Amino acid sequence: MKRKINLLIPLAIAITISSCHSNKNLSGLTPRSVMLADPYTGDWEFTIEDMPSGDAEGILNIDKQGYHYRASVSGDIGDMDLDDVTIQGERLKGHFQYKGFRVNVKGNFEGDIFEGKVGVTLISYPFKAKKLYTLVAD
Image (cartoon, rainbow, N blue to C red; front, top):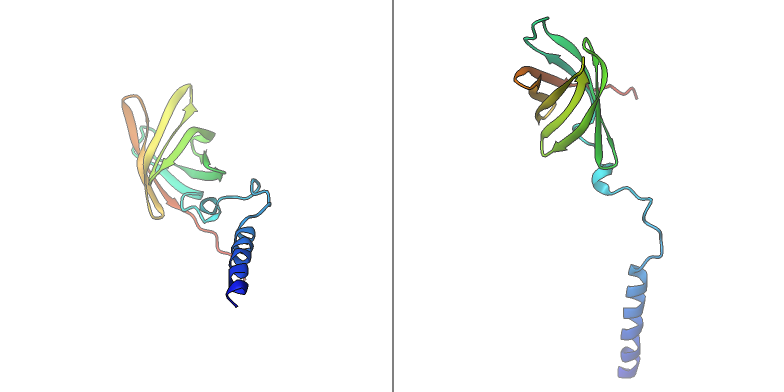
């Protein structure tokens, strides 16, 4: 009986090791952190306040491609892509070109609210946005 147990132990170890090892190619899989709903992606209705020409309104769209964020704005100020968009923690940074000027955008997310600043060199204006949600019919 003891001899049978001694033979079964190496067999059990071999089966355990072989069942844990896989020859599947995992390079096409998306990491779980990317698959989870990202709280920053989607459309955000924004207002740039207190500008000399009055408040500007529009939509900030944030999308994620793998590990990198992309963003664009459209509305009263036109349609343009943000460059060098980063979101670290709850802080967004990026910039876009407007009438030959580099316009910096930065601020913080808190739930479905974004508050920050948009501006050039020494002038900045409050930038506030609220996330828009789409209702899905059953």
